Length: 352
Image (cartoon, rainbow, N blue to C red; front, side, top):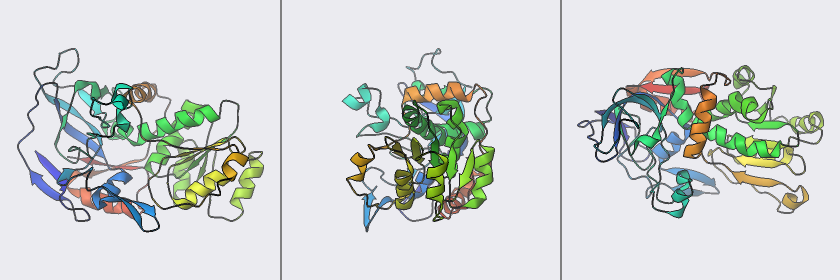
């Protein structure tokens, strides 16, 4: 098998040739046909998340190089461990891989939240992922049918789609009594949120992005309108047009400025859901949280159950398409650099 690996944080990916993996127990080998490149891959390649003020989350302990990145994986089942029943998976099945795998031994995993496990085995992070020709999956329960969807589009559901879906479900709670939805950021994950927003919440979102070149894609994906959060008059105009502010704001950027725009924009009793991992630190006056009766919460990908629910929605035809660009697997390093510099609209997908 061929793979492109992080061998040292901050260094270019390195090509490696190894024997094809051999499955044991309930393991499944998938021949990768498409793997999306996520913005979190940039942070993983760099080896840290920026907390602002010179502080960082060091990934050296949780992600130990050499490591093959890539967690948005689609492919064909080519080998099964001896303990996999034919009713669970068969050679030739074409499947999306759920990558957010836990230890299976802790209370968090037992509760069905293995994506939040403290000892994770997530593909492309803690275990080798999809920047490769083959990937070893721990069990058939992590494979999902995507019949009717192109594989380059389908792979994005494993992260950008699932992440957006999980955040939209949290926003839906705040929208039960009516109101507007604000989505901040129209990058790959943000656009996934825009295209699913109406199907999940019943509301067409307002999209805020400082990069006006992304506005057309946001509107095409289903946005009600696109606004510039860096404009000094935008916040006031948004408050007027929404009758006091949106009921929910999802921050798909995760920077100090984007978070503060979302918090300042929401109405009393509103909810801010932070998804993005761009980095930085925001200063928020604590009394404003009770005075606005605001809820500030994070959202990290989604459960195995969320994945199943989302795939039913995806195959229903109710979700608008996402702009997709494909590139050869050998271009993985160049794609990461393009993503780092903000030159990607939608999602770039690697094809081995």
